[in-house]
Image 1 (spheres, rainbow, N blue to C red):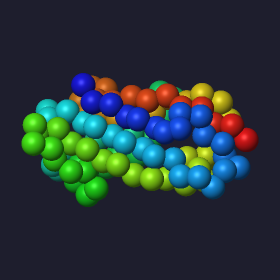
Image 2 (image 1 turned 90 degrees about the horizontal axis):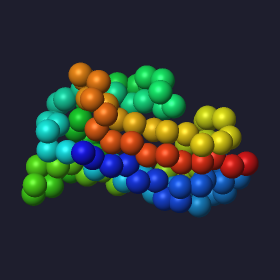
Image 3 (image 1 turned 90 degrees about the vertical axis):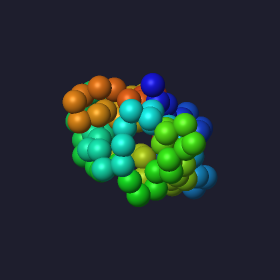
Length: 101
């Protein structure tokens, strides 16, 4: 399986320090595959695997992206679960993070 790492895992929404999001997807996904973003069990955007993701020597995929807290603080304060799913609904990677004021 893949993984999502969000550092720090507790995000202060009043902070200006970057949040580092690292997504590692398994080699079972391929460039051009449709993937689904899910937050707290609710389906969000659909995107095509490609831009920003770098294929590794073992065929897996890696994306490392710094984000501003203002980008991830659109949800209510508290603990959230973020997942990436394949087009067939298989969970490829999941992370949990907490938003604080």
